Amino acid sequence: MPTSGAKPMGVQDETRAAEAVQQMFNTIAPRYDLLNHVLSANIDRLWWRRTASRFRTVLANPNAAVLDICCGTGDLTMALLKHRTEAARPIIAADFAHGMLRRGAQKFGATKSTRSVAIALEADALHLPVRSESLDLVVTSFGFRNLANYEDGLREFHRVLKPGGQLGILEFSEPGGLIGKIYALYFHRVLPAIGRMICGKDGPYSYLPASVGAFPAPPELLAMMQKTGYSDCRWQPYTFGIAGLYTAVRSPVLLESR
Image (tube, rainbow, N blue to C red):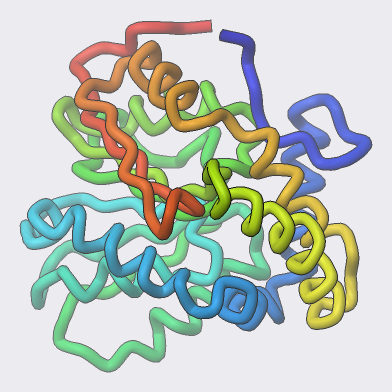
């Protein structure tokens, strides 16, 4: 299977792709939450809650080490925190877009609760400043699709997970049938127009449908996960397959290397 990753328009090599994505998300950070909630009709909140609930068992363990990578403005992190107990280890919320992470850190700091907290960490998902085999859970929501190299991302997550550790990737997909046709019209025509009106920029919300269209279909990504060394690889569709949660367990060894 060929190496694949995000390719913003006019960009080919991985270094420039990562830089373009980073700059794009820093630019739209001030209006990112508003755009997400408006464009998804608040369904995104349901997706984050369902994802967090899926990992409630590991989250309930106060000693579990948890990383939310490509955390953006921290909405999934906040959903994960609801399943943590008092005095549990902090969740690491990491992103390489400083503008997004800063807004997430504001949410974490505003949380008034006896539950666990989150620590914001500026970091690249492909080069995590985390010890090998140190994490019990790695999750990401709508960020994996933007990695410059998906296989390298899976390998890096595999590296930092403990054997038996869990992986969760919440991502968009393209549903089939009539729902798919209706959604495609919205996704490719209506969504970029609304995004442009609110954000004042055309690029980011034209990039979104293009990136989803280029992203591997569920069977392809599941095969990539299996080849990279994960077991029990599954995909659970959300909202007619508009989005879905990929889950897997880190096998003891990395099966495929470059």
